[in-house]
Length: 513
Image (cartoon, rainbow, N blue to C red; front, top):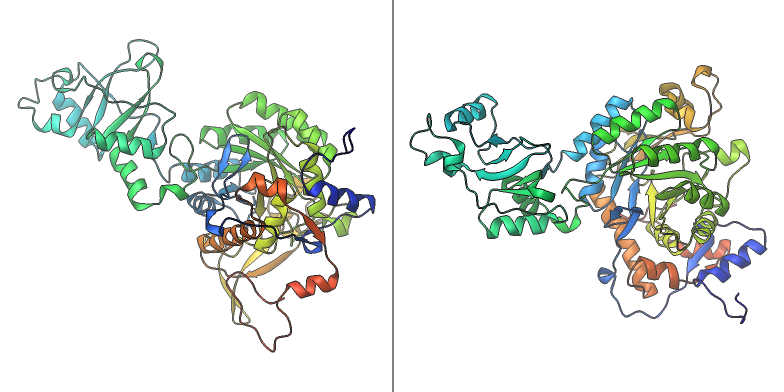
C-alpha cells in the first residue's frame, strides 16, 4: 500500500500477500487463474520473452542442463523451435565445448574468419589453392592486411575466375570488383538474404569501422536457412547462429571450462548449483562477468527474495528459481529445506521487479497450464526436465519396459549421476573424494517416450497461448501484470482433471493421473 491507501504493483500481489500471512507457500496445483474479458484469440498471443538480459526467447521454454535431457541434439532442436537448450556439465570440459560448437555450427550462416585473398596474388595460384583445400566455393573477399586489421578492398567471384583468359599471369586485382556491397553487424538473417538477393551477390561482407572485415555471409548458407526453415521460429544470435547455453559450476576447474565454452561461442553461462544463495556462486558470478563480459551469466538455484537481490547485486543477467521441485529431486525430503515453487517464483520476481533481470521457473511443471501459472506469478520463462526427457533428441537409448517405450530420466543429485561424474556431487556440495558414500538428493526413473521435441513444444506453447486467450492478455508482460489467482481446494483440483469416466484415451497433452 502507498500513503493514499491505494495498492501498487501487479494484480497478484494481494493474493500472495494473504498466502504468506497465513504462513503458507503454494505450488501449481494449489491455484487456478481467474478468466477475464478477452478480445484476442490464442494464436494472436505474443509469447516472446527472455532467458537473460541479452538472450531472447521466441518461446519461453528452456531445457534443463541434465545428462538425460540436454546435449547438442536437444539444444539444436530447442533453438530451431524458438526456445533454448543448456548443455549439461556432466561432460568433461572439452566434450561440453565440442557440443556447444556443434550447435553453433548447425546454421553456419555467418563466417567470422573467412578465407580471403590478396590483390597481388595470381588467379591461377588462388584456383590451385581452392582445389587443394577442397573448398566448395569460389567467391572470396580481397583484403589488404598490411595494417593491424584486414581491410576489404574488393570481391572476386566464380564468374570472375571463369571469364579470366590468362589465369597464369593475371592478378586478382585485375579481375576483382571494387564495387563492394556490404552489410552491418546489426542486420538479421532476413535483411541479409534480401540484400544479397536484391543485389545478385553470393557473398555479403560485414564491415566495421574503416572497412575492417568482421566476417561474411554466403548466399548458399543464408538461402538454405531462409528456404528450408521458417526463420520466424529460429532462435538466432546476431551472427545468424543458434543460441545455446552451457552449465558451469563454481570450482577452479569450472573457470577453465568457461574459457573453453567461450572459445566455441556459447551465448550464456548457467551457474548450476543446488543452492545459489552462497558465497561460491556469488564469487563465480563476479569472476565470469569480469573475465567474459560479453557473455550473459544466469545463476541458481534459489527460492527466496533476499537471495534474488543478492544475485542481482553480484551482477547476474538471469536467475533460476526452484529448490527441490523437480520430479526426480528428493532435496526437500532428505534435507528438510525448500519452498513451494509458485511462491518461490513470485517472491523472487517481486523482490527484483523492475531491475531488468529475467526469472526462470525451474522445476515442478507437469502440464502446460503450469507454465501459464509460473509466468503469471512473475517468471519470464520456464526450465523443463521431465517434460522434455524421453524425446527423440534427449540423450539415452529408448528401451521397452512392460510393453511401453521409455528412456531413463535421472536427477543430477541421484547416486548414479554422482558416481559417474564429479560435477554432479559438486552441484550438491559433496566431495567427489567420497565416492560410494554420497548422500543423494535425487532418484533414477524412466519416462514414456514422447516422440520429437518439436511436437512436445507445440503442445506446451499451445497450452500457454490458450491460457492467454482465456485471460485476455496479449503478451508475457500483460500476463504477469493483470492476472488474478484463486486458491483451490483438493476437491477443486480433482474437479479440474477429467473425472467420472469408465475409461479414457490419452491426449497428446494430457495423460490420465
